[in-house]
Length: 392
Ligand SMILES: *Cc1c(COP(=O)(O)O)cnc(C)c1O
Image (cartoon, helix red, strand yellow):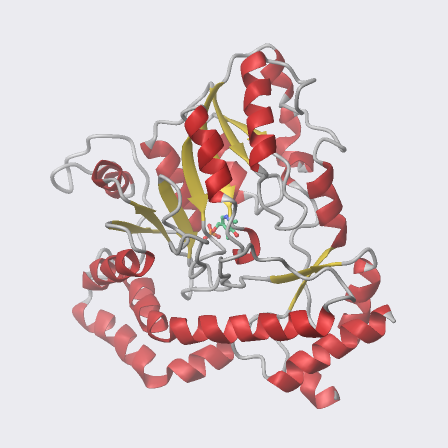
């Protein structure tokens, strides 16, 4: 048993690298040879592949998932006075980009089963902003005496589980909100209508951070959209608001390009990605079979599939379980120990403990188990067995 535990990584990039082998070296060497490290041919090749994969006309690569979110909000002209609705149970980047542009993040509590934004509460939050009434729904303090214009909802597919896009679009359409899909954790997931994650909002954003389902060897990200007009603006914004040529600048932008080397690495990783997805799904279903009844296992909505960025269980004995697993040499992680409305960075919004009870409860009870395509069945059995004995 001890030997089994020794090889268990939370995410195993080493095993993936040895599988990619010589072909990865060759891809990277080709970039060294042609020397176009910025916006080289691999960047265009990757964008074409990503767009085909996700099923949208436009994929614009960029420097990170955070910049992907930022670029979309910039293209939509989000600024001071705008309200952008999102979940408090996500990585900081989702809400950070809102504040960075001077707009106001308005948090909406999550669904108990999926950890994703609850469309019914989204409607309540929008109504409360319009009424400037914090008694209707917990709002930022300043929403009491400022008029904020509801503009955007950022839905997150937490842990790879698609959010409720039917419900979200329904509410968004009623109030003319744009929908931004934060698919940083869900590249490869499929919504119940058969569409790939990244394509379910007016724009979608993903991340190629190394530990994400599709990761490069550094920072990287991409924006997806059907809109030719937004695609053009975002492509310009990511290169300093570039116009017709390099020294023609038509808007204020950022330096947000994806490195050619990272594009080359991603092209090679895309070759094995479909098989990796299947392997992740196998790991998840094995976990679920072995753990059902012992902990609350993750729920993927009917008809959807999941990229399994994380396999996250829930138990009131979370801390004890984590310690017991650690003692067995099994790495785990808590995503996320503190919801965003209680983060010091957002203290000025004036949210309080108790504002979003479902997110707060999740932060006390979630535990993510090792999840990657290279876990073998002995390792999965060992992990599941260790979870059960710790809770016995
Ligand atoms: C990782 C992540 C991001 C940010 O991606 P980076 O590439 O690290 O900038 C944004 N949102 C969510 C939900 C994430 O998990």
